[in-house]
Image (tube, rainbow, N blue to C red; front, top):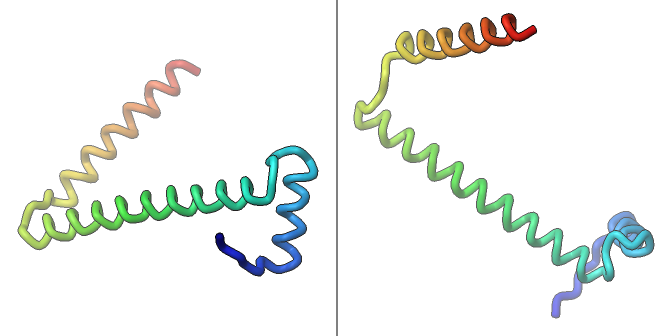
Length: 88
């Protein structure tokens, strides 16, 4: 079992969540909080791995010229704007 001093503000907030019926117990609130932290950490790890793959690709010369990328993006967003204009 874990015991933690959360401070008055967090204790009060947790109690409010329980009192309003949003959660059944203080433990339920804390479990949900830990699950949210786990989810965020998992997403951050995936993002870090993606960034590292990109850096590795760039270091190995597996890149595209910026002008090609920007031309493609410009065409894409112009087409989206034209479509939105026609449907308005």
